[in-house]
Amino acid sequence: MKAYNRDVLKMLPDELESFVRDWAIAKTEYFRVEPFRGTADRGRDVVGFLTSELHEGEWDNYQCKQYGTTLPTGGAFHEIGKVLYYASLKEFTPPRRYLFVAPMGINRNLQKHFFKPTAFKAAFIAGWDDHCRKTIIEGGDIPLVGDLLNLVSAYDFSCIAHVGVEELLADPAAKPVLYKYFGADPGPAPGGGPPGPVQQAELPYIGQLVDAYSERRGGAFADHAEVASDPAYAPHLARQRERFYDAEAFKRFYRDNTDPAVIETFENEIYHGVVEVCDEDHKDAYSRVNKVMVQAGSVMPSGVLAPHARVEAKQGVCHHLANEARPRLIWRRP
Image 1 (tube, rainbow, N blue to C red):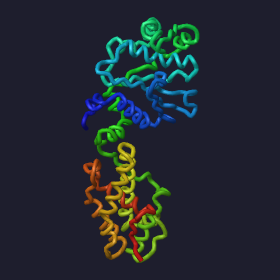
Image 2 (spheres, rainbow, N blue to C red; image 1 turned 30 degrees about the vertical axis):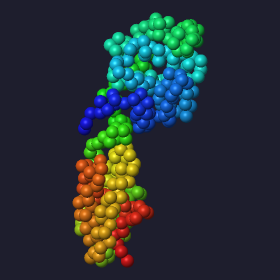
Image 3 (spheres, rainbow, N blue to C red; image 1 turned 180 degrees about the horizontal axis):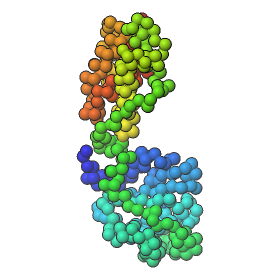
Image 4 (cartoon, rainbow, N blue to C red; image 1 turned 45 degrees about the vertical axis):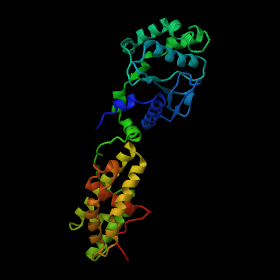
């Protein structure tokens, strides 16, 4: 898979913030993700709220710094001071985590601070006058005293860290974001298999298969359990269930790691690739199923899924289509 380090490094500051916002959304741990921009950001760039309490509860701050060089210590102190100052005014609770997303990295001095939280806090307090006192509010003077000093002294500086570009790109949650921004290939999907007993969600397509087996045998099967004990048809049913669940895993992976429209297109292409075969005259429904399975395996989808659409997933999608109300694949015809 291509490395996208350079692409991220070339982003404009606003683009990086949008990228980080989408990344935070993809992490799924947040109740809500909100960007804060402009003069009223209060030291927040992208906020991940963990609960519906929003700024009255726990939240994480992603501070995006797209510089041409490493993040300096003074600049980091200033940004931390801004957030803690407004937290001391009760505008929000102190962040649970404070993460600097600085693609160019941080300077060595700041890096040492991040690895020694107690010394980091002491250095921050000692450097308040130089980096925060007269810079948080233009023309203002904010001494480190009273409630502000108490909050800074109580704050856990081990919650402050740096997210480098390689760490960001290696996060599984970044996959759908890389696809959105750069068309990144998410790689092959994991396989899937039946969980054991037939599930409620399988009943529509399995019901169609039971009808097909009954037609071929010339006598009705009571249900899928009876088919599963028949040596002539049990292996066929087992293969179809494997395909159904392989397609389920395939669709879930690409829905999570690309865009829902990618799977919609994939299913549509499979449908149009097999529907004429399905509509042809066949000896019976059992023959129709088998001919459609062969045809599905030869369909070549477009786009990002082209190199990853394995035969089982394409065949399994046909059973998903047989399950659905939209143009269904019907095996047994009047």
